[in-house]
Length: 219
Length: 264
Ligand SMILES: Nc1ncnc2c1ncn2[C@@H]1O[C@H](COP(=O)(O)OP(=O)(O)OP(=O)(O)O)[C@@H](O)[C@H]1O
Ligand SMILES: [Mg+2]
Image (cartoon, rainbow over all chains, first blue to last red; front, top):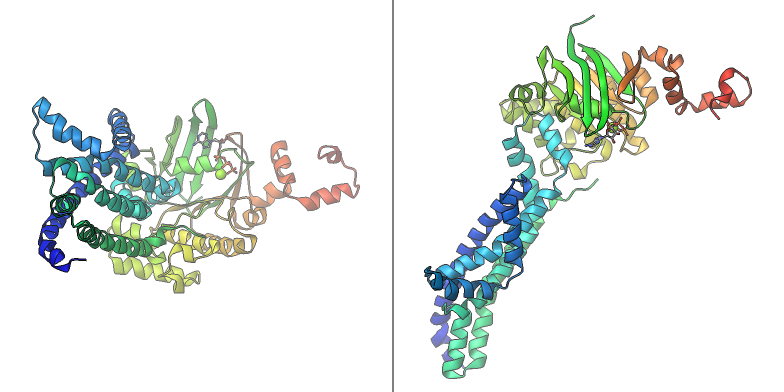
């Protein structure tokens, strides 16, 4: 292991990691928003929007992110829409993640028993209060494990960004290998940086899950 | 007779083609305890759900203090606060402590001060012997304890009428009593109650009036002694027959009355 090399290119990785996290976080935030909207549309069975969501979810889940990114980055300019690589990354993540997040929220909402709504209703709560105080807290705590898994999944998916020349971690590693043949060092840094990004998410997720476990029914 | 609280006239409820309630008439007076009995599927739960505006109705009218109850209408939102309901399945909110379960609606709906609601909740919990469970979560309670808390939760809204839908049906036998005792206590305090139950000896002890519902209609209505000793209609006799094993035994022992052929 050439430590000199590692120290020399550490800042390069650092910059790439920051870019990865930045695009990852923004993409995930949008994915969560898309997911919430889709789940709400399905939960309230809003006509037309419901069919559109269903098509979107199938499309999003059954195409690889790489293909989606190619569409955005190389395909869209052909119809006059030119997006920067960063924007493509964010849009791609949101498009892919939206459907996964929607499924997580949907299963959480469906897990809330009807009698919960009915008893809240008979206590005189209005529908907004029922949603806010009874349904969402239960639905979200049921969704947490799936949400955390999705976040980790999406962060890992960012590794295909290099295909649209985003200077993310993967791109940097490939670049260095290509330039200097320092495969071991480059890959070592790559792994370390991905772990630095993902481990905290994983740990926080586990803690959250443990805290929220009260939602599990039990007689 | 005291003032009528709840008036039901010609209530009709259908699920698609299936008419479940077919012109039910019922008036509940202040302080009255009415027990509704009847075979499975006769519409007991449906009746309570209509009263509580959980179901839309296809005909007739339900009035609480002269005001019409209708699913989805704005006034029903206010009226529903005056109706407390406890369900068969444990319906406490699992993400809230016992105390928060009880105070949620008083604080959010009636805009009462949290401390006041909590104080009242603690008094009621003490009364049913569950004060030490105030900060527990529902999953840490037994079935009987949960149902008692559910009753307190309904009570804390100061409803004018309480509806109970087979609240002991899902309980282990040894827990049935503790829940029924709470309800008996409420009846003695003069609360107005509409109770659906299969516990016949409890019905007898608690009811001012027993209503026998069959095939979507009130078939018989009487004082409990009268209903249980001398049911007038054949359908009620048949229904009660299922519950009275000692009667079966008596008949089998051979006092060959006319009835003996009918039960075989
Ligand atoms: N949501 C529903 N959709 C369609 N039919 C329903 C629905 N709820 C109840 N029913 C029907 O209405 C009838 C009355 O049901 P209900 O639950 O009121 O009976 P019940 O008297 O409470 O019976 P049990 O003693 O078993 O609780 C039944 O035939 C049932 O199949
Ligand atoms: Mg029922």
